[in-house]
Image 1: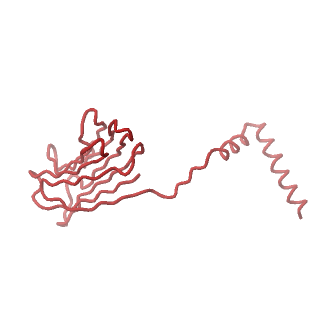
Image 2: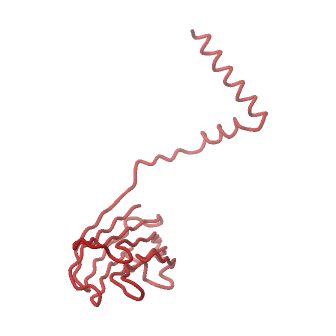
Image 3: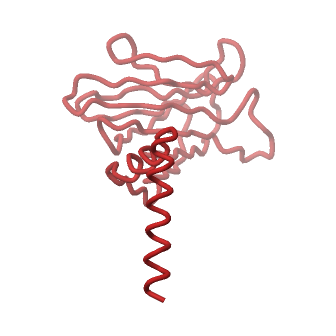
Length: 169
């Protein structure tokens, strides 16, 4: 039995050597298996849920630096309706660990996108209620503290509203 197992291994090795001569397939297999292993055990996640009064705000810190953080925001409908054009807005944000700045790509609730950094702006992404109508905005609160702030617009928010923020890092 051991002899058959050994012969099977020898045949597989011979086949790899033959394939290596015919196009380098064995080299690709060897190169792929010799790369350092990266083990992903699942996404790191934080979920914040809170209610903001008109004109209110909530500051939170980014959970990571020098590592992009995805931020998904939602204004939860409590009246059974749906926000027009959308209730969701999001951003991909990176804070430099050396406090040099924060950069992002933000997607507003109307689908428009903008990329920027604290060199030029502090406005990351917005919850819109139509053209030139702002319900809430996600802005940079502090570069050094790696903090962001969600602010509601008192002119367009007349009731306390629930917000959900998911941070993926």
